[in-house]
Image (cartoon, rainbow, N blue to C red; front, side, top):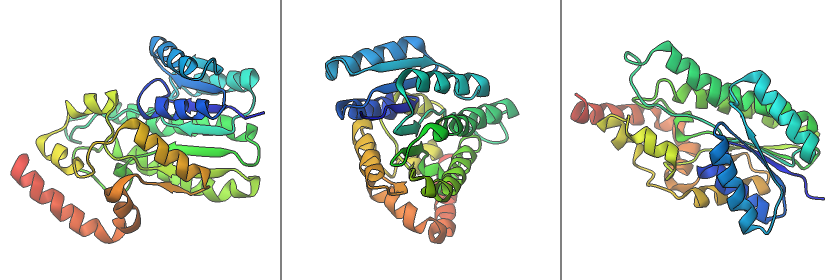
Amino acid sequence: MTAPAFITGGSSGIGLELARLLARRGHSVALFARDANRLQAAAEVIESETKGAKVATFAVDVGNREACLAAVDQAIADLGGPGWAIANAGIAEPGFFADQDLDTHDRHMRINYQGALYFAKACVPAMAPGGKLVFVASGAAFFGIYGYSAYAPTKFAMRGLAEVLRVELAPKGVSVTLAYPPDTDTPMLEAENRLKSAATKEITAGGGLWRPADVARVILARADKGRFAAAPGVQMRALLGLHSLLGPALRAWQGWIVRRKDG
């Protein structure tokens, strides 16, 4: 029997594409997101494509610890322990540190990092050897990006958690993959772009615009092989290998853009 796939942020974008691909492989799927209507629509898409794959939906804010743990526990009771656990839910509200209030910073950390933490904490004890734990981060986890003071630290924190779990879960036979998607054509990016300054738009445009399905395929291909990093595209792969060395140049480059665009 194929173990189920649990996916947060599974009602749209990369999360939905991951769910569609895994359902086509024969996995039952549990989708976790805040909007019940969007979850239902996503479930109907998956079911129609796969001739009735089992899809369970859980309308939950993953940043609410008790609600997240309870939803995952219910999914395990309904479907069994996950073979795939993908922490994909997140928010991104660009803005400047001097302008954004602490509630905005707290909200990003609660949903992006703590939501992934709670989800992983609930899933891992129920995962058997061969399980795949995936965290969907961002290129913002590589270096400080102008206009992302609330968002980027949450992805740095996720990266740290994934690095630790990579070594701690290896003896259990559970592999960990950390994904660094470039800009992807999703509702989240559309909302995000409305808040970006001119400089931030230029800084983040270098990787091009990817389709969610293409990003999802790269993530699954890397996780299938047990690889830790999934970095779609030339820019993300370059940052993966060279971000520490490139740090001074990246900061200088951003400063030049900021002076032209936002100065």
